[in-house]
Amino acid sequence: MPMQQLKQFIPSSPAFLLDQQSVLHNLQDLAELKKLSGCKVLYSLKALPLASVMHWVKNTVEGFSVSSLYEARLAYEILAGTGSIHLTTPGLRAEEMAELMRLCSHISFNSLNQWQRFSGIAPQPLSLGLRVNPKLSFASDVRFDPCRPHSKLGVDIQDLCDQDIFKQLQGLHFHTVFSATDFEPLLKTVATIREHLGSHFATLQWLNLGGGYLFSQINDHRPFIELVKQLRQEFGLAVYIEPGKAILEQAGYLISSVIDCFNSDGKQIVVLDTSINHHPEVFEYQRQPDLIEHQAGGRYSATLVGSTCLAGDIFGDYHFEQPLNIGDRVVFNNVGAYTLIKANRFNGYPLPDIYAYSNQQLIPLKYDSYEAYRQQWFV
Ligand SMILES: Cc1ncc(COP(=O)(O)O)c(C=O)c1O
Image (cartoon, rainbow, N blue to C red; front, side, top):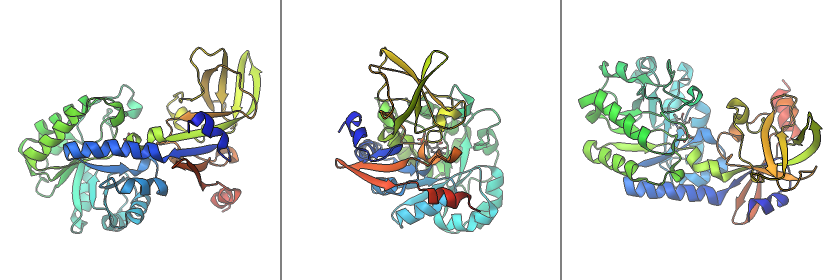
C-alpha cells in the first residue's frame, strides 16, 4: 500500500516504520553483486541494530560489522554461530579485549598503538587486520570525511609502509566515503594502497572495502565487479564490503502528526509530534529531510518544526497543495539508517513507536513507555 494511504492506518504517532520488502529488495541487489563479483557482504550494525532487521538480513550476508562491545554482543547473539563478526573502532578498551576477541572473528586495529598493545594477546583463530587511512579525501564536507586532515580513523598509509608487521597482518580495512554514488573513490583507494604497499599487498588474506556506497543508486556496477574479481584472482583475497545505509535508508519512514499551526513573522509554522530527537542528523548536519507530502511549487508553504524547546528544532520549509491542519499526518522517507539509533528523549518526549510493514501487515514492534523513560533516569 502506498505510504500516503498506509500512514492513516498506523495506530500511533510518531512512528518509525520499516518496510521489510524494501530491505529484502536491497539485499537482493547485494546478493546479485555478490554472485557477480565474489565479494562478501557484512551488514554494518551501526546503521540500525534492531534485532528484527538483523534477523531479516542475516541469511543473505556473511556476517555483521560492529564498532563496540555491545554491538559485538548483540551480533553474536543474533548470528548464533551462523556468520562472522568484524570489528574496527578507535575506541578499544583494554578491559574489553578478552571478550571482544572471543566474540569477533576479525578485528581491524585502528592505530599502530592498538596493534602493539593487543595483537599479541589474540587467540586463534581470530583474524587480525589494520584499518588503513589512504589519505584520499572524497567528501566536500570535512564532517563526513574519514580522511580529513588529522583524522583519527586508521593508520596513515605512509606510516604503515615502514612497519615490520606484515608477517602477522592478515587483512586491511578502509572506509573512505560518505553516501558515494559512483565507484571512482573505491578504484582510487585500492590503487593507492597497492602502490604504497608493493609486495606486502600480496601477503594479505582479506581486504575490507568498508561501507559508504549507495549501491542501488549506482547504475553501472561493472567497475566494482571487475575490481573485486581482480583482487580475488590476482591475490587470492577475500573481499568484504560492509554497507549500512545501502540496505536500510530507503526502507525507513518517520510518520508524524500535526499538533499545532500558527503564523510567526509572516511564516506558517506547523508543529509536529516528532522532533529532531527522532532524526538528529537534521540538526547535526543542518540538512533538510525528504518529506513525502512535499510538492515543489505547491500553493501553500509551511515551516515544519519539532516539538522540543530547542529553537533550532526545525525540519525546514516545504510546499503543499492543501494547507496542513491539526491532526494531519506527514511522512519523512529515507530515514531507515542512522535515525532511530541516534534518537533520544530530550524534553521527556518518548522515542517513536516502531512498526514493521511485512506482507501487507502492520506489525507493532515496540512502544516507548513512561517506565522506560523512568528507568533511564530514576537513579
Ligand atoms: C567503518 C565503517 N564501516 C561501515 C560503515 C557503514 O557506512 P554506510 O552506512 O554509509 O554504508 C561506516 C559508517 O560510518 C563506517 O564508519
